[in-house]
Structure formats: structure tokens, C-alpha cells
Image (cartoon, rainbow, N blue to C red; front, side, top):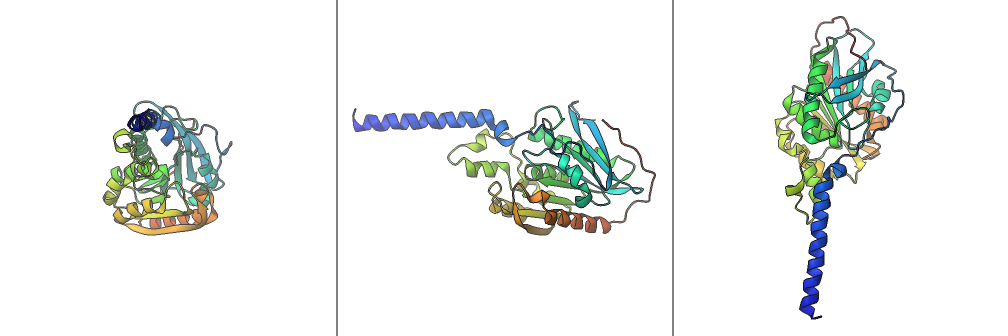
Length: 291
């Protein structure tokens, strides 16, 4: 075989493999991006500092969403938090740690579609739509101060939190290991692949960062091979009200939310921010619908 034919054959093989890889990424991007965890991290979740209720809510299209509502034992109205988890995160652990993370606050932690006991399949559009619905539902509780509701997002969930904060009047925002966009992260990982033409779930926080009016607290992992700091740098440069941008010592992408230092810093930020706003007058507590 001549040299030119060998080269042509090699190019053909490379082209075939490249096309196969592109097709695989296009077909399997949902599995690459989302990794639903079905088993509870904490089997019988309960907050030591809150009344804990398992709740089931229906998305606008009727999909069943399951999680927990925690409310302080004191009369309301209380400041509140909606929590959005990461790519592989089942959120029952938030219930266990709520006393440290969210003292004196009502907390809504719901599993995404396809995670935990929630039904359906995850996807960016539904995650953001469901997130807005959850924010509205929490604001509608009589024992919640709707003027003091914060959103928190970890990793993948930071992209949900940013978009919910854009659409709803979030009092404060906490972003744990956030990124500029999933698209940018994918382009970094799959160099040479036309990711911008293939990726449907982009979570482009960078597009919405400048639209957030709430004070925003950014927490980074000291060692993060999932969201390199350069992708957080780009996002932070576009945020209008960065309260603080901190790196948690001895943390990585997986352990950062569980560390006492992280939890103490989040609790301090939220408590301080909520204190700056005049609370509503006390009203009798209500009882949420339990699953």
C-alpha cells in the first residue's frame, strides 16, 4: 500500500472514531451530566434544631417531587432557604446538618427529578422551572418571611440557584463550587469536539450573573478537579454583589459542604444578611402537608 493510501486510511479511521465519540456524547449527554442518586444518604433524616416534615409537591406538569421542609421550633415568620444539590447529590444529608447550616431558618430541600424519591428525568429547563416553583411555594408558607428567602446551590445546583435568583426576589445567594457554565467545562474536557452544537443542558450562569441583585457568597474548594478555579473566577468577575469569595482549607469538590468550617461560614453569612432586613411581625405557625 502506498504512503498516500496509508495516510488516507489512517485519517479515515481517526475520522470514524471521532464521529463515533461525537455521537456517543450527543446521545449520552444526560448520563454524562446528571448522575441521579436514588438511595438516601441519611435513612431517617431529622434536624435536631427544626421540626422536620417529609413533603411531596407536584411540578407544573404533575411530576412528583419529594424532599423535606424544616421549620424552627420558635414562632415565625422565619427567614428561609431553598437548597439545590449537586450532580450526584441526594439531599437527605441537608436535613441532618440543618441545625448547623441554617439556625433559626426554615429550609426546603427537595430532590431533583429522578433523584431520591422524586420522579421524572432531570434536565436544565425542568430544574429551573421546578426551582422557581419551590421558591414560590416556600414563600407562600405563613410561617416564612417571604422577604427573606435565600437560595443555595452546590456545584451543578449553583447553575440552578443563579437562574432561580434571576427569576425570583432572592434575599441572598450562596454558591458552593460554582462555575461559569457547564458548556465551558465540557469544552475544556472534550477538546476538539463541537460541544456547543451538541450540548442541550448548558447551565450558563455567566449569562445571568450580572442580573443578580442579591448579595452573593462564593465558596471554593481548596482542591477541585471538577470545577477548576478559573471557571469560578470568570463567574465571580460578572457578579454585581459579591459579599465574599472564600476558599475552604483542606476541602475538595466532594467534601466541602460537610466540613464544619463551611457550615459555620454559611450560617454566619445568612444570619448576618437576614438580620440586616426588618423581619415581618410574628404570625401563628402553620403545618405543612406531609408525605
